[in-house]
Length: 355
Image 1 (cartoon, rainbow, N blue to C red):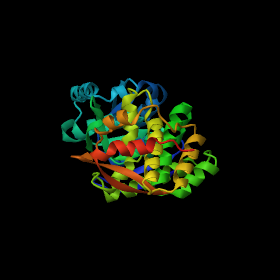
Image 2 (image 1 turned 30 degrees about the horizontal axis):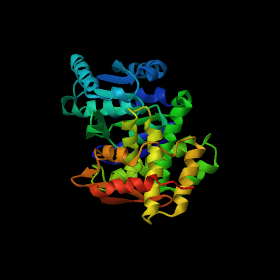
Image 3 (image 1 turned 120 degrees about the vertical axis):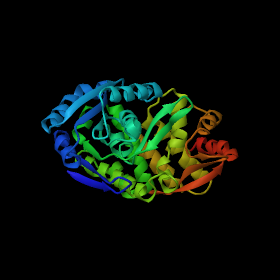
Image 4 (image 1 turned 90 degrees about the horizontal axis):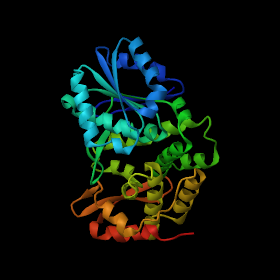
């Protein structure tokens, strides 16, 4: 088992390994010996696979356990679902001496984290991510949120978990399309901070390397978060591919999954950086080759005007400017502040065809 420690407003460990899900009871007991009840939030797909295993591990450790199952998918990350779950917590008398568990992918993790941050102004919670995307990205760092009609993740809070437990065996039950979506975030971390990771992804088999790949990604994210927990500066690098990617998700009514949208967004944002003279041509070439290697998309039918109008709602906008992420080399990116009046042209540059 690999352990990565995050030192933030709440310090916690990320545990990564095969077959470690049954340890969740003892791990939580060591952290929170006085907790009485654990409230699990999961979705129907994950619940059918892993809920009983988690419940058994927790009850054997002496906890009272309750659970609530939601419909899978981004559509569940909304205000109505959030309020229903808050009422459920209150009806079951969940207090600050209890805790929540997010068992699932990014939707469950974001929603449960926001519940934990706001129920009684804050109760502990644990992340048990079951998708690659959630393991390498959304379960780490304390960003919690729900979606609004105006855009994705527009209501939320920074609230760190007490523990993140990544059992890589849960990835065996993922559909290949969902696993590939997680690879988009893995590639993002290589572009942000590890040319070596990019080489490994292209030239070495995933089998036998998964723990190392996940640990590399969360370590890169950990280092950024420890420098900028509340997203005032450096942490905005983690938005690479997301300004355009979130716009694509919204335009498709979330028919295009997050990972696929981020893959396209990274290509567009790297192409724009190349046009501006910040990124060498090999950045775009290697990025596209990697995305193709994992059967991820590299283009979109949406035009610059559509993408621009949705991107105006991005969280990285401040007044009349927006922060975008600009690759400068393989494994290195910088933040670029753009006037809103230049955003449309920036997206147009990113959409230019390139052989």
